[in-house]
Length: 77
Length: 224
Image 1 (tube, one colour):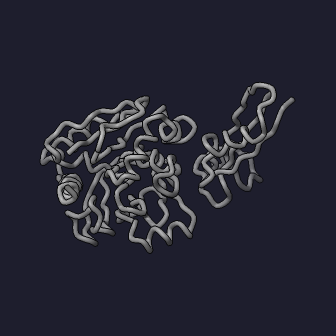
Image 2 (cartoon, rainbow over the protein chains, first blue to last red):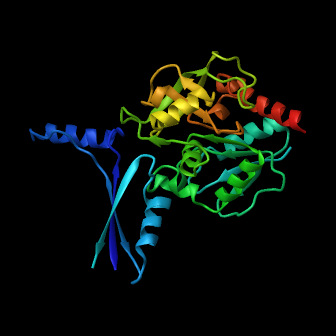
């Protein structure tokens, strides 16, 4: 079983990396990009039967810092 | 007086902090590896040093905060031992929950490495007792992730409880309310981005940081 964890900065938390990417896109001549926010994708290869509670605990205890980040869990068959 | 400096893989200010501890206490600190699960009994003072623990993987300080030794640090802190986290050490203390908030990438996106003026906000803590409230001092900074962040309620609480120990006298990294260093609720844990251990001898160009360590020792002597 695999799970994908998407970790993103909360709204209102400054994202200098996103800003730099945005700037670089504009430098390449791409107009119409209103904003860029960068995040992380963490793929977990899990033993079958790993509980949702455990995956959630992994996110809360380590993978995301919930002071500044949100996370979303996507289970992949 | 027993002191210790925690050493993570990737720490690079551990020996500087040890020199500062030894100069102030007169005793060599124990160097404690991150896999150790206990600290010397009745430890008085613990340093969590700067550097790039675990290569800043995941988030600065995130892996170090979950390493075995940090449980021992948390226990010692709850007993009242003084804990000083500098730079990466501050990041480790916020990641481990010993201090509130988080340290984000510098607002300007750049690594900032220079001397900065700091305003001493709270001169009542053991860490700052040798300074005067409102005094401007200079410590060097060298960090990429020093942009202090906390929600408004947390910031208001920190300010209201006098837990902002040091503030940048100029905005160098985007930190909320220019916060450079904060105390825990009981005043025995201080996390700060600037490096006091780099300004303790005349040969360093300044001795502004020496008073922090001397004040700590004075605080410990007063307890004994």
